[in-house]
Image (tube, rainbow, N blue to C red):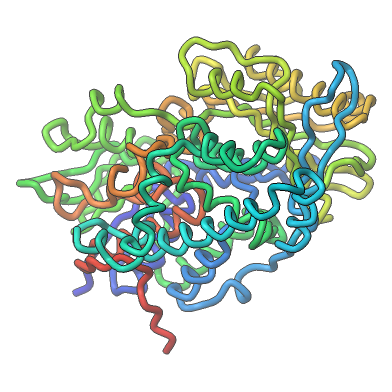
Length: 522
């Protein structure tokens, strides 16, 4: 008889885990509280517009390639990827209030990026080459020794990759990323370009360890790609592979608790859309739900490894106000990805990661215009815009709505960002050209995904919450209970969610190796 497994949550990590377990011989059932798969990688369709409401940057292609190979296929078979050039455009805060920004495009390819750096700070070109080289070495070491490691074998932390980089590693772990960048570069915008990636890890660059400068290699050397159809296409690909592998999906199936007997997981209780209660009797339980929700709501108190007192000393990543706009006419100033960066961005980080600090005006904003690449996401003659304004992970900020009907603070922040976008890009009539407007706020993430504090990512990647210091993928107290997703090891982002699925498989197999699993290419 095959071993039975249940996966809680059909987000990226839940889908990815179900595929690997099913291919390994498990009979897998996925229980999802919402009426669709994808989790935070959501889709909103309004009047011919298709909005991704979650991830939008396709980085770390090697992780996708490896995962799809493990799943018995390839990235080429599953996704239609387009390389973006420019990868993104940076709009620095204008010199004078009310004026337009002077944007800087980040081109595709290391040679082109070097030319840009030579224009910004010619005397730092050698330092930039060194920076990218150490980023490569840090990335290689991370993949070989940290990202795919269950940390069940301490000897893996003393292997050749770590020993090779030990002198540099001590610096990378003890020096904050922002300081690490400032030691080599003086141009303020170049400094921001090299440090901003910490925000994608849910972390203040003033607190993130410098090892995360490896992120610069991803967008400045490997480039930024886009899967046609958006990240919905990634969700659809994983869903297809799961169904093909025999995974059973039950939607609108809310897990209410995990059954534990004598230290072993015995299954889960769940409730269907009609309120009927059910019990799934299985040998293996994988929670791809938010770890805080799993530990403090689904597990019996005596079996909680991360009870509420642990979360009181845990640093949250950011929340966000998301703004989806359908705009009439073209917006040529905006490429596929844009960053609006304020001069005093420390004030932004204080508001996001500090206590009781109001969001400043102006704010740093991420803008995605997928209609620059994909005509299917907007009606002809229109543009599709997605704005992400990082805010504090705080449910009280509220939730969003349609056409300005969300909670007051969410809509105020949305108005601020829209007005700022119009001003900085010189599109004075942007607001009157908006034909569709939808917003989401931290309260929506609590309601829809049981997100801790309404955060969009999970615990931030400070040193004390990274690698072996982050919550692991196997419950320390309950045998047969495993964790996947952005709130556990190795961390936030779609590539990390795919790796977390592989880490669950390693735990189940008893595999204590450090690197990626070998792919059976039969």
